Image (cartoon, rainbow, N blue to C red):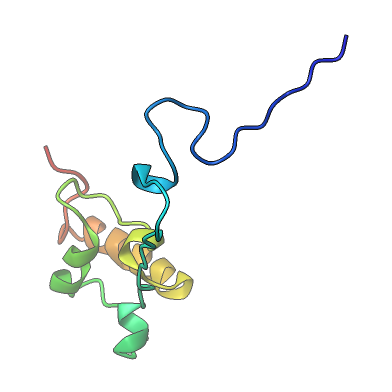
Amino acid sequence: MATQMRRSGPGEGRPGQQGGPGGQQGGKKKFFYRRKRVCKFCVEKIEYIDFKDVKTLQQFIPERGKILPRRISGTCALHQRKLQNAIKRARIAALLPFATD
């Protein structure tokens, strides 16, 4: 016995969801446009990230003390690696904390 599976179209399926995103029925869809983040170091043409420049490094470390990932900080891959090394060196030199309570 073959049973047919029915595909649900827009507005069908899960209860509580009607139409497209946000529960809209018909009309125009609102698109959320996120501007692409640019690397701060590329814009300012900084080639060397100094581990002694604590003020700059603290912008890439939240209160917990972790290093922000690229997708959140917006740095390019090259500068993210340099930033990571600078933060690790600053931690060893006791300029930045490893972790906070």
